Amino acid sequence: MSMHEEKGASSSGSTIGQVRVPFTPVDLEALQVKLGSGLGSLLEASHIENGALIAHVRPENIRAALEALRDTDGLQLTVMTHMTAVDLLPMGPGPMASQAIDAGSDLYAKLQRERIAAGEPRFAVVYELFSHIYRHRVRVKAFLQDTGSDEVLPAIDTVSDIYLTANWHERECYDLFGIDFTGHPDLRRILLPDRWDGYPLRKEYPFDGKRAWRLGTTLEDAVQADSHLGL
Amino acid sequence: MSTLLAPNMTVEERGAGHIIVNMGPQHPSTHGVLRVVLELDGETVVRCVPHIGYLHTGIEKLSEYHNYIKNITHYCRMDYLSPMNNELAYCLAVEKLIGGEIPARASYIRVIMSELTRVISHMIWLGTHALDMGASSVFFYCATEREKIIELYEMIGGQRMMTSYIRVGGVKDDTPEGFEEGLEAWLGDFMPFMDMIEGLLNENPIWKERTQGVGVLDQDTVISYGLMGPLLRAAGVPQDVRRDEPYCRYEEFDFEVPVEYEGDVYARYRVRMRELRESHKIVAQGLQKLRETRGMPVMWASDEFAPPKRQDIYADIENLIHHFKYWTEGMKPPAGEAYASIESSKGELGFYVVSDGSAKPVRVKVRGPSFVNLAALGAMCEGHLIADVVAVIGSIDIVLGEVDR
Image: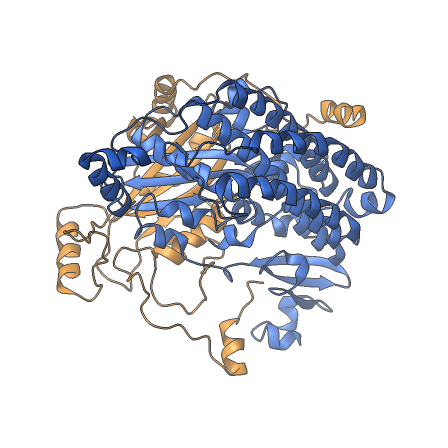
């Protein structure tokens, strides 16, 4: 054991060093102030909710904001624990509130139109950041508008080069929500088959699926389903 | 064969003399249905691309259609090797939304169960990891040891694996008769078992040959990939949610966070083995606290967010109505969002829950440690031999049910 410890003590050549701050509960209000000075004009708004500090950022500033959060002294949010999206489209009314609104229906088109006209965002893209040095967390949110069309996906810049974690998470968001991450090196579906139709975690996607999925029975089908292997 | 697998890829793209090998999704050493496509130069891995999704069950979509109580049953099926960890993380997130204090006894039971869960998860990890490397006897010892805890699971939750025992506001029931004795018996057996296993492997030349210097990731890469748990601690970062952001009264327990610095497969093995000894220490302290809190409540006192007691249902109509409303309509946490994470056996397991004030969540995002940790597989394997891929996959400790959700 002593061998390991000695080795560890001498291997402090990492840029993200061994600085360790003893545990005290994170002072969120002080962190909020630091966040404000660290992000400056990039920060739209921030608030504390259920023990978490949430920062709102405009989608076009997301790269600059996350880079600042990662590199600013005192914040150093070195880890992205995860990122995800939330579909803000409201569910239908009534006791069966969680029924999806049919994508082809007039109600859905009307809702979409109204929300775009009112400037209401459709998706919240949520980044959960963590500092392994200071043990604090910040949740960054960027809101995306609906494009009003199924062909054009709402887009936001990739952060997969700032945090390597984001690579798979952005693929997951693209796969399940249909959000385009501009500049992502390998943006393709991750959980669902490549030829899947639609984005299942959108609220208008029906719970029991659009239609029965068939992978195909011939060799050609199988080859096509796997056309690039990701290599 | 390779043309069939990669029809669009020219020889130039592949590199002269390189071959493509498809591993999985039915390969036993991929621990489930992971598929890895390898580009090989001789026996050396040039590129390694994991493909996931073969076990995708849409749990996050499902969560939006079921109420907060029913959802617990989905999550224990996600990482099926450590079911109670999943339940716990989800319940903590919902409790954060609601706000309120969990009774001490419930927290102690949760701590004991999550440490036992860590042990059963690590038992499967060690058994299969050693099996992959050709040490088949370890698996049998681990399976036997796991069985003892599974029996405690059955005793406390009525099921061997999918217990749904941890509930929002506490736990389902108090510990049954004989549980403390069972725990004590396990505590007595476990350390000799650990000594035996470590005696088999720690200085075993074949084990060290296969694991030392394999799958090394430096600290910066590990942090950028967001790896957590044993993988992060094996790279020399002392990070542990239990100690740094204590939940369930972990701050009252005395334990260490084991750290190793090599960042290879052997260091991950060492971290997990030392962690198991710490778990034993925590369970022993938990048992003491369990004895001190006998007869105290295990569910928070809440009219709205806790089921009525069985005897009260028969006593008056109000409770009967509440009983039916609670189980059919479900509870309605206030609108808002919350993220809670725990130190699961595989790393940080978190739930991000968004509520609109109705009985069903708007969004539940699972931060599965397996999913995040698996993303670094390519970086760990490149440059190593194909036989090392198996060692690296084993050392990440993935459960595909959680990766694919």
